[in-house]
Image (cartoon, rainbow, N blue to C red):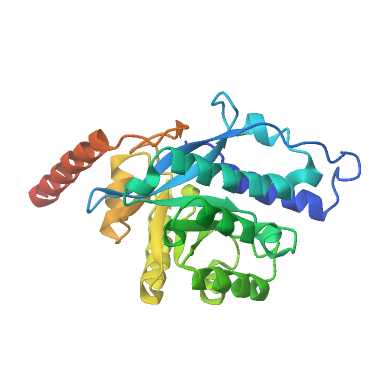
Amino acid sequence: MQEVEYGVWARNVERGLRAKAEAAARGRGAIPKFSMAFQPIVNVETQEVFAYESLVRSPNGEAAGRVLNRVPLKSFHLFDKACRSKGIELAMRLGLVDTSASLTVNVNPVAAVEANSHLSLTCCEAVDVGFPLDRLILEFVEDAQLCDPGAMRQLMSEYQKMGVRIAIDDFGTGYSGLSLLANLQPDIVKLDMTMVSKIDTDRATAVVLNAMVAACMELGVEVIAEGVERPSIMHALTDIGVVLQQGYLFARPEFEALPKVEKTFRYIQHAKTKHHLVAQAS
């Protein structure tokens, strides 16, 4: 199963802050040292890398939890901004701009609408180092409990006008997913990996995902499926029109590196051919 990443942690911490859990007991403190890993999002139809997602890691490449558990709550929003800066800096150093791929960086929705969120600085930093804004994707976690959809829509619209694309992560986990889709009008949604993991085994989940994808397509919103671990998941997603996929089936996150995907694409082609032959035989 895929590891729990930054978005889930960010949502839980923000809820803790809202409830003032531990906030009074823990001081500001410095944010811990960290670095980033990158995982590709591939287009299984064209066999190209659509984007690389930047993921938090410890300075020696250990899982995100080693860092996230040491972030002082009162420094949480500062850490949120620092992760985006580090992701852009490393992506530039690794030559991502020399490819056709985009970069996805995580954004805490509450921090984004606050005056001290530094979100605008992220775009300024990207411009300063020569990273094209039209290849930057800001990935927000879906959580209607944490932010005002009206304020979020206004904020997202401002960045979309700058050429930045907006993605909603964990789409389908909230109680108001389709409502948020209509209100926020993102460029991209990432389907919740818990649902994705069951698309090939649970008919009800498959029906719900099919309806979500159809709604997104009707609205012109691109769909990414994360948590793809089995060929059968890849095929089930492709059958409903989801060709942008991310998961261990294609590549694990690589520490301070852009994973090589040539073998991945050879595997995809082999799996697609086999799936087609089986379908014809049946």
